[in-house]
Image 1 (cartoon, one colour):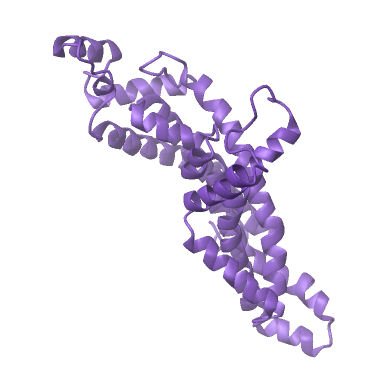
Image 2: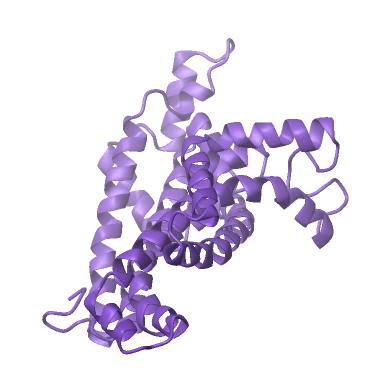
Length: 323
């Protein structure tokens, strides 16, 4: 296991380097730039050139990249072009805010979806299964931003039961009750998307396992159905679900940009949109780095959980699942 983790971490360094290289090239290849955002009637082309020189934007792109990389390796994420603010001061609070929103939505959907999917696998096409199918169709088909606007229209504007947007009411920062009120609508929107996927995955995974010969053998021997489900089938059914959870882990940090935008939630997704419009390259690269690291961690956690759930998977050995 240790050898496997060391090898994966070394591979991750190379993957991160390639991701930053591609992301840096794509961001700088996009039309416009920071100096274009500073255009004003009183600013001459010569003044723009001076501004670009001062920001280092007139340097060849490979020099800009390695300068950014060197600073990043020393823990310096750079400064914004417009206000010269440290990127870390802008980024890290939004990561925490996104974790609060996405973490609650993710955990809530998991708590509901996996038991629901397992139950539906034992009573296919029953009322519960049909309700789950309807919820899944709605979750997949309904755009999150549109659902969010509907909730705002009903519960905030017409009924006036919930706050329209933001994370806290003014002067209520740190009040957990106020935070919960602000979480209700965005968490509902995000949970519906997670729920739609996880119910389907857990149901289909469980049905596939329940169709295996060893399950039929256990039933033929008179093993109680509850024991068949929770002792013999559930562990194997969790393996594909773990794959999905591992792939979804980066979303917890990356956030749902449109949902955060609709509810004016001060998270990383909303920050990415704002910084993309403002062409703040340093902030965009920092967000890309955080998301890439979470993708790698998510895949690594999924691989380790494979071995925990299924002893047949031997990480780091020839013939092992992820070797």
